[in-house]
Amino acid sequence: MPPRLSRYGGMSSARTDVAAEQAAHWIVQLSADDPAEREQARAGYAAWKAADPLHATAAAGMENLLGQLSAVRAPAGGDHRPARAALAAIAPKRPRQRLRQLAAAGAVAVLVLTTAMVASERPAYLLADLRSPTGQWRTHTLADGSRLTLGSHSAVNVHFSAGERHVELVRGDILVDVAKDAQRPFIVDSGQAAIRALGTRFTVHRDDGATILSMLESKVSAQVAQHPATVVQAGQRARITSDGVGPLTAIDAASVQDAWRAHQLVVDDQPLAEVLDELARHRPGQLHYDRTQIAGIRVAAVLPLDDTDKALQLLIDNFPQLRIRMLTRYLVMVDAPAGGAAKNK
Image 1 (spheres, helix red, strand yellow):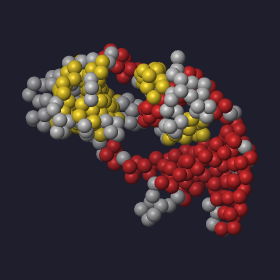
Image 2 (image 1 turned 90 degrees about the horizontal axis):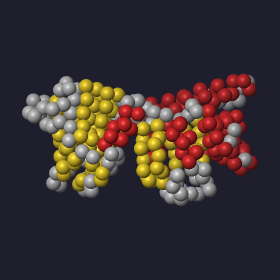
Image 3 (image 1 turned 90 degrees about the vertical axis):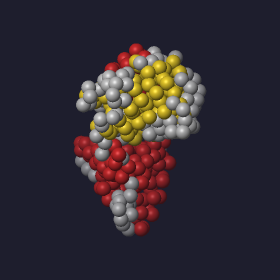
Image 4 (image 1 turned 120 degrees about the vertical axis):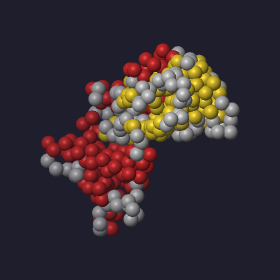
């Protein structure tokens, strides 16, 4: 982790760790079995939060993490004892053990959250033929000689037959280098569109409601159900939705390829929320931000996707109005308390 991350929130890391530990201790008390103890803890917790803005910040972070855990229900209606045990693990012990216990508890809590999310929310990713973990890029050579590079936290299914080569993009993004085979077209299905090529090089990014196609070499035909096909040439980018293929825009194909090789995010006058969306996809845990609050901030930058801590630090350096609080490695909160509507320089 870059040493400058201690600047997050303008607070010393020691004070932040102590406040997080105290917040966890209060939350454990709030879950006591005795109703009288719970009521007493509620009053004490409220007074503690009101006593110091740092307390309120730490409490919000712990409550947010606990909320994430509680949102994932167990089969019998939800068992949150693992989360409670993780928080209880950081109840004050000997001073020299506090930071170690804090880190261990955070890891357990994140493990519980991650395991539940994997089991209940991402079966398609887990069952995919080819996958890449968060923060890692993987290249595969397919049976026909084509090469697929999977971006961070991406997944595909591969179906080859005598008549066609079919790749289903389950999530994330891929760089495709298609081997020529005049007898079998190569088709990438992103859910929104079928992208057909014989021999070419392109990238496909699948978002929740859209597919972003960037052509690097040759051309492809992009087809959306109930809409005519659109030919996309090298040096062009298209945003594709269920409504069809949007207007084609020009890109620098060489720069796109360089960004892929260097694992970089290149943005030009893009809303900060969209930049954070992409950074969140490349780091473990939760990256929280209020889209409305930061709506006026736009970014032009080159950010490292394989070191998102450094990317966040670069945003701090260029936007003094931003506050980025790393409550744990797996829980980061971004806001702009002073407001802001300026571009970075």
